[in-house]
Length: 310
Image 1 (cartoon, rainbow, N blue to C red):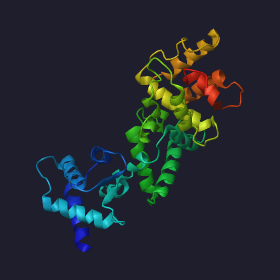
Image 2: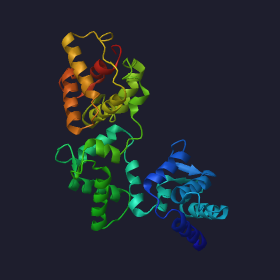
Image 3: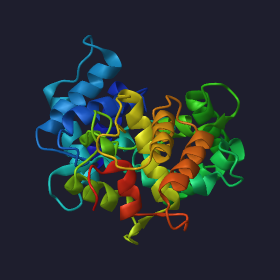
Image 4: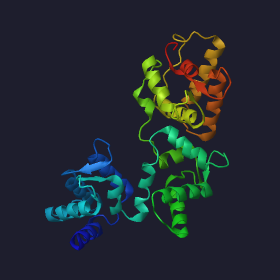
């Protein structure tokens, strides 16, 4: 055990001492090809070699023996169930503390609905921003959840680090688009559909979309679910602003079509902004919420997205 620990510490000091979380994730994503959060087998050797290259270039590379010793030390330290796999959480221990904590954010949200739940929880004053004290509260909960005990001084340092990295206009608060960079969603769910490519979705595709955003399976989309859908629509709409609300497949009166076109124009707005998102939400409810209950049923959302009546 002592030899394994020495090999582990020695490799870190020599090859990964100032490795950043961005460099780590670039290498991790390259080797975790199936995205399951694990690296196994010979991939570990190649992973360590690439990490060393990221830090020191080609001039100083670990020997085969150093790589072998590091792999054995990692497996001894983390592979409790002896399945020959190492998770990203476990591997991130090779990073300095200041960098490893940034990886926590990548593991917080899988969907835009989850992102909006976090946003609405910590934007306590509904200002449309996560201000420094709200960010501090968010970090406190996040680090506690991850089992990381940090001092007040270190917490303050983390707040300043995040503001420095993500507060692009230096106003000491995070806008929605800045928070979205800090908490990246793994994938915009709507990118697999041709919503902004000249036609709306089929009934089968619509069923998949509705099921995805109806997180609580209530049969309606509301609150954070609706905001998550709008966030994905706004981000997806930035990439392709095709005329996806043509009147060839909508039999509604001209006034309704005008409202839909207005909504389309807003959804393709290039700025992801909390206030704009809320305005889009109110407009969407005004158009499609027929029974005025503040949420969208399947039939109501189909007015916007589906190419035929359900």
